[in-house]
Length: 169
Image (tube, rainbow, N blue to C red; front, side, top):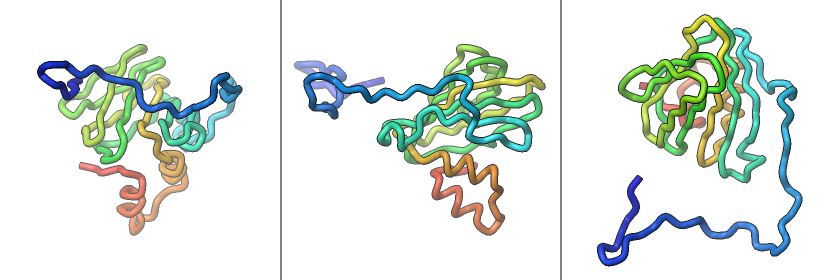
């Protein structure tokens, strides 16, 4: 990553402006146990867990656990204009497309896709797999995930995708 610099005094990344202005801290953490049920279960058996939503993080980020069933696919190549997306593989093998090539990503592998970056993912392993999806800044992806579950009429598909910052190639 590069940062703008004054040739006589190189710039250094800095922390953002304070958002908490108290002096003692506060009790404000949220906890979600691993046994909490998924918010969405798709017909394929795959599940989506809402770990941290735009609403719960004040728009900072959204974090979701995506559990693939053994037979589940994934979205085709697309990009987002307003959000970045990051993938961290928890277990199994997930095919990740980085805009140039497909990668067999395994436990511990990570892919960051900035806004505008082409990407896709799918499970073709025939085995269950799980990954974390991080969107930053936060965006109301729950509406997108739920819309996919409910189904989108062909005549509403384009509008739905634009509303949810999803551009297919």
